[in-house]
Image (tube, rainbow over all chains, first blue to last red; front, side):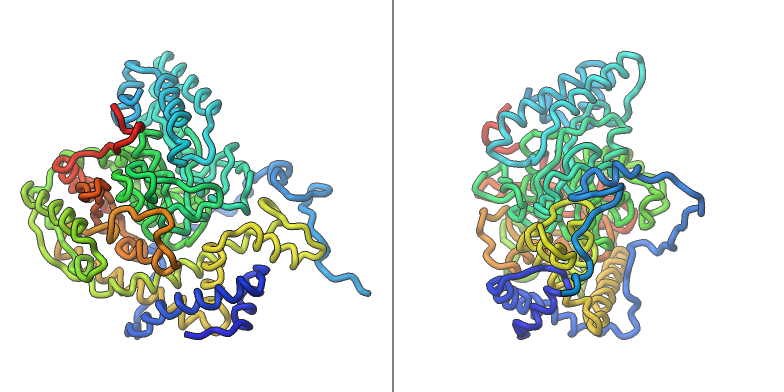
Length: 98
Length: 489
């Protein structure tokens, strides 16, 4: 299966991974080889087969809807790369108008 | 000193409870061995000398006061670095979590501590458990204690190597596609991948949520069973954990296999990929079961060849989703950037290694709008057929016996392409896809001296039968101790 450089770049963008041209090029070949392998799934007739999600049929358990304690703010912020006023601090989300 | 290191979990707990040895003496013996030998092996990323000693002293006070610390009293245990430990650096073998100190314990770790275990440190692994050789660790390679030019297997390579070299009495690993069983086989130790949902995943850094499972690695079947008894059981923090009591496995150790029906899945023995010495060793294990009263039967798992393609859709898709959380905002590595989107893309580019990026890319491809049915849903349907194969086979027989890996441990740097590396897991993936339990254990050594492993695969929640058959195989083949200074008596 052939992939174009632009397709690989689009996937990298969706995956939020900055990539050099060299990385895009090597991934183009590697992804194609893996997808070729995966294409064997097409040989299997799965008509009417329910997709599997758990080894043991289970229903989702819900906890009681009561308030519980969670990590204190200072602990949650303990490994934050940047914080301010008890919040995680990040760079600008919206480009400043020029 | 080496006598304590190879005494095993059950025996060490017995001696500490009986006050024949102190928890501190046991812990010091293991710490001294780590300091002496782990430079050559590389199984630990972090050793918690102070924490382990303090915990051991506390346990000795409990014993002196007449209290029973529990079934793992004073047993030194190492934990794979993808499992979080309160106050102890946890990186999942990745630069993106460089220096991260978790504020909580994984449920499995909390249960170990509550049962009297001493946590020695964090064990080397492939980055985010993605690999089959431990060569994808961002920090350092781990070598095989049987031959340091070879890999210990992966992704729980450090967990297997530490047990083999007597640098931990037992360890926790995780198994998403064979990551407990394959390194156990490569290092000549026992590795037990429980039924999916048997052990809480709370605090296991997520790779592929529908496949991941924590399990024990140890020197003997009885030791692994003891650890599983402690860590298993429902946990309200993991909604996929199964609401069943933890299994009582000890009675199965001496139950024997008289009348047990053992299946040999023919698809695992066909084809040129399987090394002749591995095939012969697994057949010898089957003969040992037959000699002890089991009946052997050839069975078929027709969808086996689709396990690899199904896995390489399901696991990367779930990984791409799970690893979206590493964005440089709340913890871990952050790249300097002027805008948020740039910060995400640069932080992830700098923090993740090549194999992790590859899998995120595959998963993102498969989950793109319009591709879901063709990839993820299709793979989950093939998964259902793989499970149906096992269900049908396990009606005819009680347990399956198969090779763990096509060959003994391969050399560092030997697997050149991603696909070559993925093929090292070709016999272990279907167990995870079906969610059933698997027990890997040593069944001999190749002419090169390297250990060979076999795996027992059983019905969901039937770890007891694996332990039953495993104990009989172990009685025939013994436990293993590597050459080299770490294996010396």
